[in-house]
Image 1 (cartoon, rainbow over the protein chains, first blue to last red):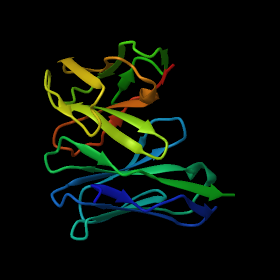
Image 2: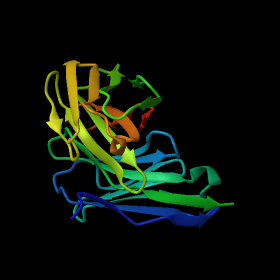
Image 3: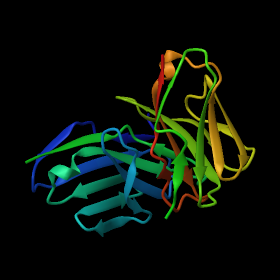
Image 4: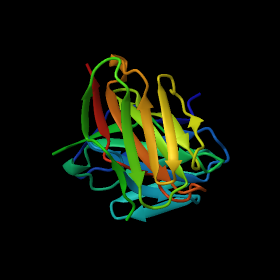
Length: 111
Length: 113
């Protein structure tokens, strides 16, 4: 089992729709979770961090964390073509020193 | 604002050369990381360091070594470059405890001919 798994892509949604990106992790002791956005040819850019169970909202982005189910998700409301990118889920391990990434989900928002 | 600086955006080297990739961070972070990223394979951890002169192997350390003589600088070394090391290399730093996000440099696109 991979340490961090993301839903397979690519994901395509129409402009204005909600895009839902999912991630599961295997280290039950993990405490910190991040979502990064990566445009083609660029380095990953942090868009959300979440540390507690529940929802965290920032503009059009909502991160959801369920530690019991070892599940973290990212919702993008009112999707825009500029949201088209690869989204990476990242989890800090129990030691707090290592960040493990999922393989990423490629999102395309169609005008 | 955290700044992670990689010495080169693009680099072209020849097979068999010794290649140095440099990374500097300005936030006094304890942890630094080197990843490579290839299409369809995601970010793969090569090496990381949690303190000066300390290093740990990641998932794909073969063919690489690292050096951390100062807290702010983490170097990746390709001892004898090969064509299968052509990739995008990303450096990142993280404060210990993991309650802050990892910050990335702009990346170095390395081509080995």
